[in-house]
Length: 271
Ligand code: ATR
Image 1 (cartoon, rainbow, N blue to C red):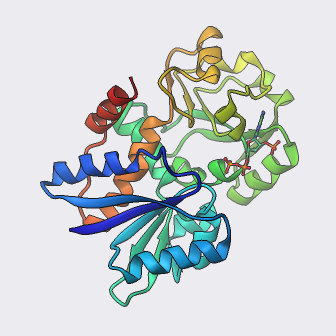
Image 2 (image 1 turned 60 degrees about the vertical axis):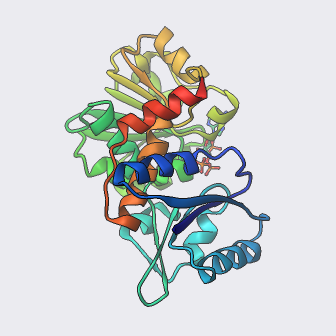
């Protein structure tokens, strides 16, 4: 059986093994996909990755806090991993070298386009946060040809820096009172603890979709807040999680799984 794994810390609650088992079933094959807990240091990460591939590993995912270490470790990078500054997918090349890719942005876009059936083309998109999560999705969003993409961040200088790099617009949280985006994406890490970014409530009034990269059994506090202030539709990040996994699976195994049934199955398991 082909062996895959996800490296992270913590990793015990990762849903990737279940997700990839669903994909393999769609392909009519069986794979092994394990969770590997690694001590948080570049040396420990490198040793764990080398050990995994030395023992016959076929490909791996990388999650928090190792995506930058993986970026530094690989022998070659995809363009989108380069732009993201982070690697979430390790691909074993025929010459034994490792290629780093980043499927997070495609995961988000595929969830929106294929699963939620929301077209980004011509839309005004506002993304909250200017950290790694935002950096990872900017290029795939731009590839959908939105009308505009605005990055708003609590620390405005970081929004400006990122927006300059990708030639998009930047805003402070105070500026958001003037914005009437079609789509809002929350990529702030505070959302993991239920902290609401201090943006204007006005931004939600004309949205067709408000998306939170965080997910849970219940709508996140951010999504409930958005709904209370006029968001027509909300979606959490479970679809992005399944979407990034699907793109990794495709890169490793040349088979593009359907994501909607897997999102539904994992959602049902969350109760
Ligand atoms: P990640 O890789 O998850 O994006 P990161 O690179 O540490 O993590 O970036 C975290 C992002 O979430 C930043 O944009 C941060 O805002 P600042 O740049 O102002 O720190 C944002 N963030 C975290 N907690 C937040 C909160 N409570 N309200 C608003 N933004 C928050």
